[in-house]
Length: 102
Image (cartoon, rainbow, N blue to C red; front, side, top):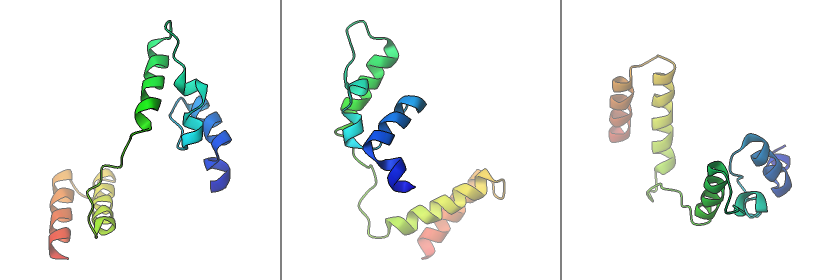
């Protein structure tokens, strides 16, 4: 299933249908994302600009040997806050304590 969803052709079709950017470089190079005529709508211009910017996009995570552990701590506490098991302040405090005590 993952291979079906992530191949270039299916990513292109999904991105067009959902009006999002595809997750593959080849699909991103399709004229749907790269051609913005002079009379293009604001949405078409934004789509083309976004596609260009994606070519130079970077993951903005600091290099850290324990980044996966930190992410899990944050995600667990974020989920607890979203489910109402903790307040936002409690989730932030708990995440800080858990990270600092590891």
